[in-house]
Image (cartoon, rainbow, N blue to C red; front, side, top):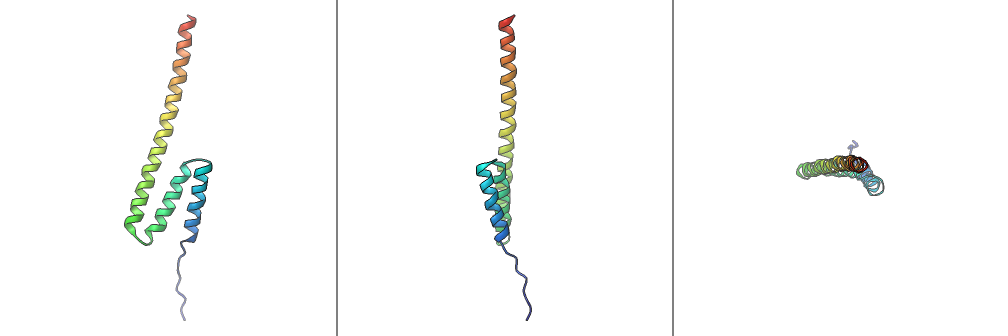
Length: 91
């Protein structure tokens, strides 16, 4: 009798759930890892769903990074403008 080697989807699925929990509690960037793991698990059965999930994960990553950079730049601009306005008031 030959033993067929089967791969389990349990570890990627459980890892994706762990990353989802981390995304809820710590940082939303962990959601990106979760989306990629879910799409990798789905790609084993249906390539189109896996590719669509990976594209969604990439779009979500770009959205989060863009939001983070934009927020940091806005905070930096606001702090510089408040310093320059207080300098005008003193002069």
